[in-house]
Amino acid sequence: MLATLVELQRLKNIDRTGWVLRGLPPRTESVAAHSFGVAIAAMMLADELRRRDVAVDSDRLLRMALLHDWAEARIGDMPKTAVEYFGAEARKHAELKAFADLTRDLADHGTSYRATYEEYEQRVSLEARLVKAADIIDLLVQVLALERAGCRGLDEFWEVTSNADFKLDSTANEVVAAVFAELVAARAKLINP
Image (tube, rainbow, N blue to C red; front, side):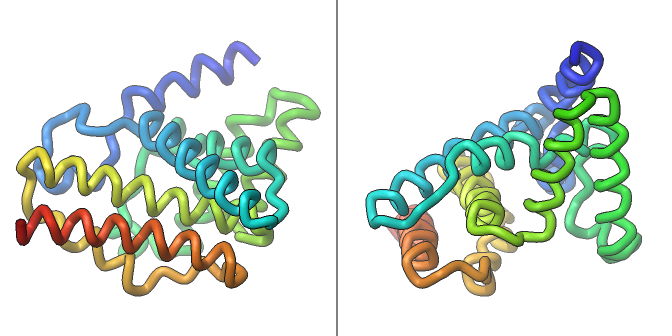
């Protein structure tokens, strides 16, 4: 366990590449900080869905949110543009291999972590789709915070709100859409006060 914990410490120091590529200063956001934000957003989405009588496995959801970027401890935070050069399958294969290698020495838990990671990657459950939605929500919350601090030129990140399809049921989709709408409205007030 210790070797894996030590290796995962790297995530605290790996900058999110999207910010670096846009000229933002180092330490704008680490992969670990992003994973924390995803876990918080996922927890809040699950709480709202349970309030609406939708069954959500919070344990599985939070585990998935916390480990969804562990592979980046080995391969770094590949930007979206990397897919253009390597292809989606090559990127996915590299991430799966890195995750498997990272968790190989964790005995039975490694197998459980890999199954949870693959569930997230394949979006086969409500929890996996909610974590993906939380991933995007955390990204947009970070963009909004950066824009409030005076950063400009981040418009492309907002495009995800118009074409995101998480394949959620109507109630979950309604909750995620409401959060997106709140984010877009907050940004609109910022840009057009």
